[in-house]
Image (cartoon, rainbow, N blue to C red; front, top):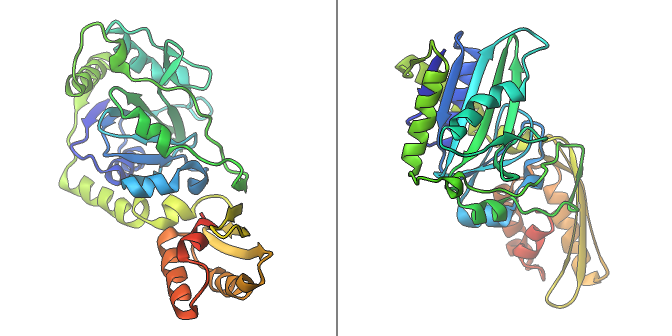
Length: 327
């Protein structure tokens, strides 16, 4: 067993490191890391359906997709992420109880009563402090999760507040649970740095043969390649989402109702329709629909496209209204 504590807080780099450790390193591994404010969606989720896009953009929270399934989680500098990567027998690799037990024991060592919940999360007093997920690769399993120690829970709740009626798809949906911070249950207060050190040291002692490991220059080059070719890309973080259907409805300041309805496949807009009872808007809406079919359902690309259309056609509709019909 080798143990690593990342010296990077870049979500892209740390997610890529997990994949590198899973697919390249032969030994069993535990890996701890902390990310800057970010949202991490499960592999089989529809990213846009899981996030509060306006809030995320306004607060500049980055959004990423991970290798494992499960639900969406929020990371920040008050959250410690843990990852176990273990060799085993095919068909017996995924075991949430087994893989969360060292973490539960580490919390128990701080006189905190933590238990594994029915949804494979770690609970304190019935509230969630850790979401967990697994991914199997050949004869290896990656089990990872969060540890909310002193996280900004108000930001977490705002960033993950969504409209479940806007999207229709077969993607895995997150199940929202009441969350809490671990430091609220400490009898003797410690800061996040001390907590992280406690967990790391506990795991080194728990796995009797564990030794520390530092990424070398070759490791980092391979990880950076994953960052550049996968974890930094719109195609992975958004475009990988399962096909979905979107229906939006807005009312303008002049009390006109406009509806949109479109399909997205592999991140690309198909079959976009607008409906309104105002004849003055119909021609412009048709121009917008024709211009957006076939492009990425990406806010930046669509905003630029809509801004160009509204300027060139002297539209009665401002670009914000049109953008709101698409996100």
